[in-house]
Length: 291
Image (tube, rainbow, N blue to C red; front, side, top):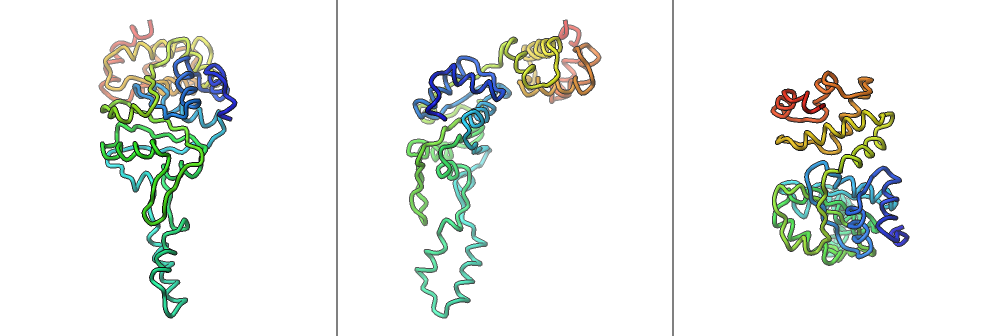
């Protein structure tokens, strides 16, 4: 499928077909990542569609999606592989029961086979290629994990001491995302194509709502998109992203509202704002918000 994509515009149409409306910048960055076989590093505010891009690429290209969710303290064992020690122990006991004289070297070799190897996301991405590998919120991981990831991205291979080298026949399409809670090292960025994702403009956000929320009218979609844009201009603890726009629109439809007025907005703000301080601030400005 990847070889059949001839231009950013063609990729944008493919993503559009599965519900991801990519602007020219996103479509071009993703196309170049495919064509150049380079990882794509997507950075931006939460809710700008970074993770959804990887999901959309996997669906549009008909490739499996393998996701590694990063967090503080993540290490190679959690991301790459572990040995299934309980099964290894049972296997060893079975060997001891079956043979009077057990060759220690033979027994040890039998313990470190694919049968007992628990593949975590990064190893699965090497063995399931072609695929889309999403390394989500890399900014939450620490420096050591970044350094480990650099080697894997460079070589598309890893060596397991007891097992040997595992190399991808076809390198996965790697999408890394960051909410910029900390700066990711330049060494990692240099290995990637980079794209900063902005919140969609008004017309595209309306189009996203019309596409993703069945039954929403053009007037309500425009009102929700316009109100969310105004919310993003306020100094909120958690400005709403596209996901919150979709939730707000769905909440209004669930209440059988076909327009956004002060009453319906007040009742459904919990779908778009997630902090009490933000709720209090916006409730005091509802009239201006809906003007």
